[in-house]
Image (tube, rainbow, N blue to C red; front, side):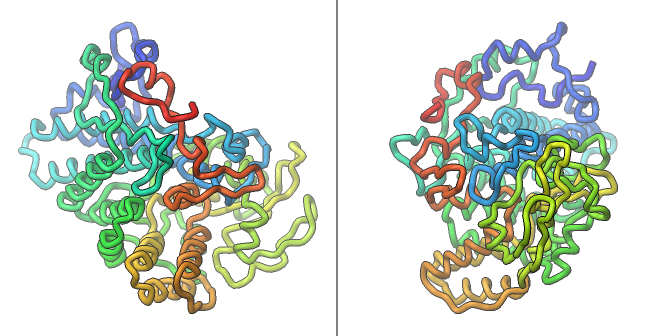
Length: 501
């Protein structure tokens, strides 16, 4: 029997009943063999270390992570899209129902535990010939990049962000756990009662991990792996959320000057989305075969569109559970006529990004009719529902930099970046200043990163209310924060549940 690569019983204090329910008769856990090795107790060879590193990467592909939720919920919980009720998925998230929120807590803390075990094992790796320092540096750098990404996606979801909170609802950050636990350490796992660290402490740890990753890594591997540029780009994003504007500029410049990823313009930008690996990708998720796909029900393609194959857009494939709102379609400059079976696009305006939206065939058997759908992630890998997903793109770096320039009172540089970006997307230049300039920067960010998981957090980091036809959500509402899994709270007397749950 294989040992689980997420072979932690509980990284923070999972409820005992949950932990025990995962244990087999001989005290080990089961897992898909493709994501497993002979156990984290056996991390003593280069082969086992390489296999172990695959597991935290694989976690990012899950439905709870970038395989769907961390992409789709960023718009479902915000104001860019509507749930169609074709399958019922994302309906409650689009309505901001309590408990219908992000769900990656357990998955990512398992991933953090895996990373911690890997980091602890690296100094003791044996091999013939001896493992090189460069190889050990790569292992450590990739592991620390992944831990930083896990912690960042947790803290931005389950806690308020630096400088923006609701004091009466604020319970602090999230638990920081930097020591691994094995399945053989049952007593240690069940007794660990880690409290929430402050948001500042969590961001400090993320900075430390990314700065170490930058020092340890190069860009020698493919974009599906952590790299020096990916660490700089992620640090740019983290610094943006931390309102650390000078670091945003520095790290954005570093990422933009790198040869990893290419900033696309005009028609090349649309063509880039049809390639198996997006040319703008600095870090992406790789779906190598159909067995790794999240499938017709829950993949990101199936979530956004009913189109199975762009070569034949009348062929029904996915569910099209989540589509752009009429307001967003108008922001993109798209004009339509008719409705239902007669719905058609009459004009796409000047913005090249309008070609990322198409009228799908709908689910006729479901009676849903034809709707405007997002085709950013329509199948391009040779098999349906398995697109490689860009997690960090080159364009984001330019958007991060122009926003940081604005907050550094360098409006001339912010405007220069904004107009360069508008030209790249086929739009006219503007001459703006003050809050109107910021609004335009954030509008371009909204359009560029739509359906890529950013919109909810862009509203959150500015403390703005969510205005949507399904019902507004004030920033002071407890639903801005996700609920921590109750089993975690029940099993850890030091872990406070978020207010309202």
